Length: 293
Image (cartoon, rainbow, N blue to C red):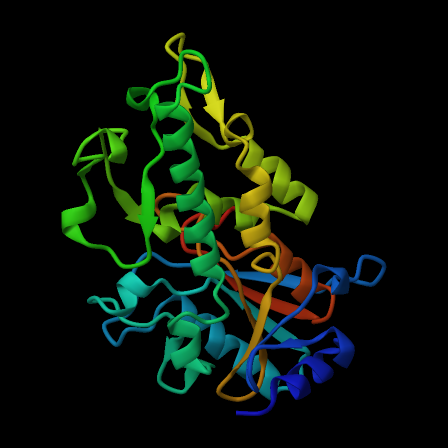
């Protein structure tokens, strides 16, 4: 592997804009998205199932980026961040395979730069604040039975899919049925992938529906008063992450919305950043292959 500063430099990103997370990965601020320069061409890679050898969307995307790099094209790839659950399950890691991989794959697959943890923390903070507001009856007509928001975890556990919280007396209230989803299924993850700026992120978070009044009117994260705290957890998670292929082509790995729950594509800001520096950008689409067309 080459130092990430070299990968960023070849792409044209100024050295003082590279925020290293160790030697081989970095975050790039949104301010580095160039809006007054020619945009590259976006190439979407999608598919229903991998080959018997395990060559799927990610492996194909990385392989194409390597091939275009070998023939002298200024190319970059944009991918979703892997989720811990599938990594330790049957599916395995999400960084490609064979010699068409994203590196450092051990770090990309596990924790990476902490974005998924930030999403889970923001989501579960909203859930905790929502339960508190419902229990205290801070919003008229909004009680624990009206809460619809579930919690999230990055490692699926069958026993947590449907649970009862608040056991052990009034000090642990509210008592209600709820459950856990995987972090990639969180609406916060989908919002992180779709937002275009910090202001846009704030506006989208404020509209998350956490439950309903007795009258049927929705209660939002804005009503709960959670948006500012959620923003503090997500302020660096919005910045795309830069890594490389096994042959040194730049790869932006950012956000990880679940394919059959959300749109299944990497973040809008990582695509825009890559398109402002590379002539060709290969992006993997897990579900919404027509997104943006």
